[in-house]
Amino acid sequence: MRSFYKIKEELYNEISNIQYIKDVNDDFEDRFFKLIDKINFLLIDDSENFYGYFLLKMNRKIKYDITSPTAITLNVSGYTIYFNPILFLVLDLNQMKTSIKHEIIHIISLHLIRGKELKKNFSTLAINMAMDIVVNQYLDYLPPYATTIEWVNLKYNLDLKPYSSMEEYILEIQRKLDLLDDNKDGDEDDTKINNEIEKNMMLLEHMKVGKKAIFMMKIL
Image (cartoon, rainbow, N blue to C red; front, top):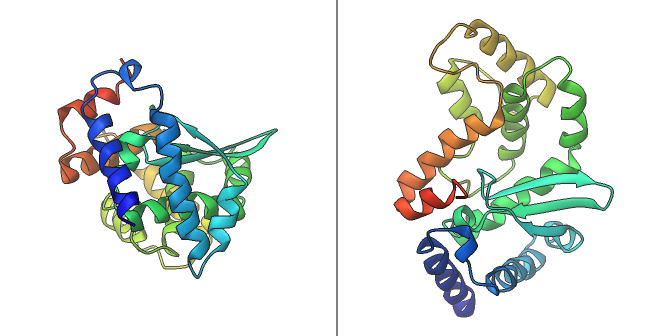
């Protein structure tokens, strides 16, 4: 474990002191994915080793412009998990494992496929919040900015019940968003990006990452 924390600290110090993405060392990606390999082995050794074996089969890429530590996409080559090192390296080990589990639960719940169909009738914001609520109820060690049922209930004055279906959450959230349609504060925003940026700024402030890390997110 000492080597894990040493690699994590070195990577974090390196990425947080770089002003432009183009200045990242050529070997940074290889060293970062060695850290991910260590997390993968820890997941395999965990009582819920399914996540570790699932991660082994996924494509992995670094993507600095995502506004969360991890994200997933589905294409002809299968599922790809993306990592934003600027945000991922801020997390502690348990939160890192949770972030990976979060994406895998989205996959096994068919959220990407179901969400695509639901976009015909519901906003992206409602869909993404509902998906995250469902997933995060099954996870411990959530980051402080995670979308939880408690957070959504408080923010939107709702009374969502635990362990309902994604579709039930979407209906309730969408009704509230429709009522807020004229709200000039942006609660009705129909993009996950703006919602994630808000939470991401909370993370950066909470963790005191520093101005340089925030500047890098602009990908100048």
